Image (cartoon, rainbow over all chains, first blue to last red):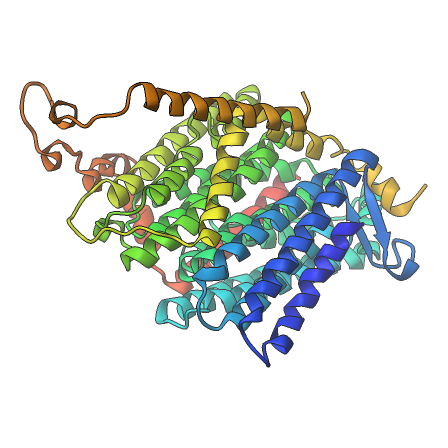
Amino acid sequence: MDSFYGLMTLLITAFVIPVVSLKTEKLAPYIAVASSFVAFILSTTTAFTVFREGIQVQQMEGWPAPFGITLAVDHLSIIPILLVSAVGFLVILFSFRFISRRKTEYYSITLLLLGSLMGVLHTGDMFNLFVFLEISAITSYILVAFKKEKESIEASIKYLIINSISTSMILLGIALLYGALGTLNMADLALEMSAISDTFMPISMGLILSGLAIKSGFVPFHTWLPDAHPAAPSPISAILSGLVISVGMYAIIRVSSTVYSSYAVVFNMLIVLGVISMTVGALMALMQHDLKRMLAYSSISQMGYIGMAVGMATPLGLAGGIFHLINQAIIKSLLFLCSGVIIHKAGTHDMRKMGAKFSSFTAGVFLIGVLSLAGLPFFNGFSSKLLIYIASFNAFPLLTVIAVVTSAITAAYGIKAFVLIFMRNTGKSSITGMPLTMQIPLAILAMLCILLGIIPGIGESLAGFAVSNLNNMPYIRAVLGG
Amino acid sequence: MDFGTTLAAFGITICIMAFAWRASRRVAPGRRSKGKESMYACGEKLGIADSNVPVESFYASIANAARADRLRDAHNGSLSRYLTWVFAGMVAVMAFLLLLG
């Protein structure tokens, strides 16, 4: 399993960078770019193997499941693995010229964050899921406070306190599971779960899912997110909004579809949380003047779409949810990276005060991101939202109405942001020019928005592949053998 | 159609479009004229500032209709209030799962 070596590359390099930087800090960005690129290549080769041969399982030190630590990459996890490695590489490339101080700390912790996200996507047991989620949370706290300003430190402390509750809930839920079933291997848990009826199970399920809902930013568990995401440096905001909450959503899908697959009520709960998050996030985004805070609320709204789609538990709904997960990661990374350029040049987060003239490239990629987010035809957001609309119309037509109205609100705040930032000439200085290492990631992400919009078959095939094996028996057989 | 073919088709389309655009610029090079750039709105001459929609307030009606100001007031940054929300959310999720599960 090549992607496992990608994961290890990220984790090891995270510790190599501080050692190398004892001599000179200049090497840190180069090592980080190389490491994330290697992880991306190895993830791609694993993706081809999974597409060709199916689920890939690795038992650590040869200890068979459920006794040893199991790493498993299946149809569901390979898509987020590709996403994390690709977006992670682009964000690190963007940071190359964007981050000018404390490079050792920045690159080391960012690689650790990316490695932990890859760990969540690889692990086959609940305890390691918890451990990797914790590593990602701790590294996120540090990166949110990276600027060492009043707002960033306050946001980081809020994030730490609220996420500590999430951690406690998940750990307590796992403890209940272990106490009742005596195993932590997800495949083994799935087998044992179908055989017993325990009153503790809904409680453990509630604890774990509430904890993961905090990590994914579902309303009313979202309160840390609008403070934490804008406070971080923009490349980190791109990782937090594009990848970290998406991996939280992956964990919800994984736990719901593998461990608690016999409890259909989990999916109903996801619909409720999804609809609330979708509308509250969009309305709050509409009222923001701070560009990054608006994008943070927008992430909550988009996670709502994904939650609602996954909650329908139909093949179309699940495919729509996974496809939107891919699109949300691409769009939000693009917009947050763009916001980094805009805020850096304009010197303010407040869209009402941004009157400077930006380069047509910045305006163009931001517009592509905004139109994709709003779900306009020929952009990737439209392709995935269309699947979600059709799936929700087949299940509960009222949900389609809510989703379409929310999409209109999304268009409203997106257009408002574009007009406020780029279409008002207040006579301030003209701002042009951007290093190539910043232009390339923006251009690639913008091209992906268009490519997945005009050829939606690519994304639909990937999402269809991800949900083709959601019946957990092939996963159980691959992990436990037999 | 496999991924490679669609990607190739996309690349070829872009090349054709780029070639067509380049050729059109040679046949009819763009010329700036006052007429092209002048603003026309229902027979009146309007400055750019007059014809712009006041975006800061334009979308406020949507927020007003949804009484979103209450929602905004609730997001006041107070950690104790946020923790109450998290706790209430957890209780609601538990109740949902226990009652309907």
